[in-house]
Image 1: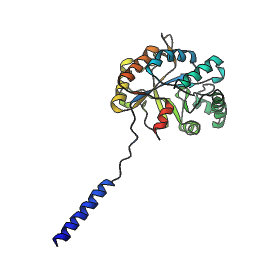
Image 2: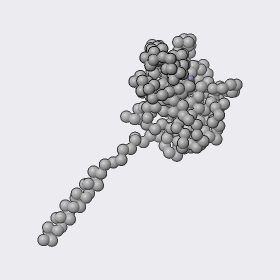
Image 3: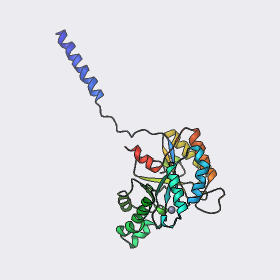
Image 4: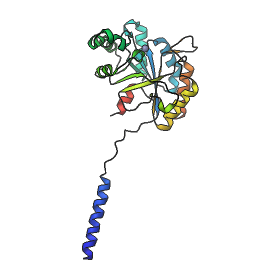
Length: 257
Ligand SMILES: [Zn+2]
């Protein structure tokens, strides 16, 4: 009888042990190192190229969303190719920089694709630029556009709403193919160095990837849509001294696999 009780206890213990082992594990995303995506919009190739010469020493990486590729001269195209070889990502920002939402008020989606997206991809591919991600001009987007563009690009980028508190900002990568960025252009209402530092600290403490955007890179600001090289250097120094990563937008798509 004692033997029977012992066997019963052992049997229960056995099942209890294995049922614990087999408990469903809560789905968790693959962990990744905290970092930043520095993105740049429009066609300031010569300024970006000069900035790259300055910041190369930090081993930095940027994602450059280029519009109006048909207006660039050959030396600008060569600079983009060289930057791609340096490890930067060259990405799409439409052919003519129309606001997609406004354009669709008077045109069809297929007209948008054949006017703004397809010729851009054809010419950029012809130049050997490996385009796999996209940013909306003016951040103008809707769900219908997202669905159509995600058939052409692996990740698409809009613009984040601006909040005062870092954790409420929508500018951190959250494993989605639709991402939003925070503008570090000098005259952007919500930009200042203490707030930028707060966003970086939040990324570091919570293992997040902060997504920033800029336009023209300059030594001295003399208008809107300009980011100081000093701001970019501040970010590079922060990333290096905190052992964080520079990511391109195409890099984070690979984190999903
Ligand atoms: Zn733009």
